[in-house]
Length: 112
Length: 114
Image (tube, rainbow over all chains, first blue to last red; front, side):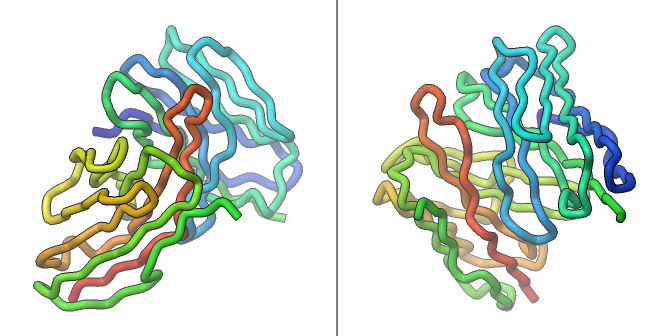
């Protein structure tokens, strides 16, 4: 069953702008991860935030986690055309016996 | 180089003809998983394995089989493929130790069942 739900489903911005994607989930988690997928290719891990963390940074990426609201956001600052891809959040809850449950993704288009 | 490999990358077959998609990882990961990706549905888990000889159903296991006889390999078997199994398939692996939660994905296998 799908746990994470990304919002918006699609986002179009200009180069240099910031892109924000949100993810909501339903049950308790151990961690939440964001992945990126270029068209038709495999997923690449971007960043992981644990349930006891509130914010994490990696280069131009900033992830926040609010466990009380069961939500997370991914911010990409100063977007580039090369950031055009689909972004998925995935939750890990080991008590469920399976490692990751993915949402349906946000498709980001960055135009130059 | 640490990686997950899948073969074949592309496959066109006909209804009912048994096929196997192989998956192999060289990271000594305990956890392996198969997903299918369909437009508008995101990634859905088919089967997963927590270790050798331990497999379990994901969200959409019907029509698929898996085996985990060796730690590095996790083949996906379609005994009698049907057109609704046309999809993009991904294999992934992960360690299960603390902090080793990242999943590593293979490049994908695009399957068309006619």
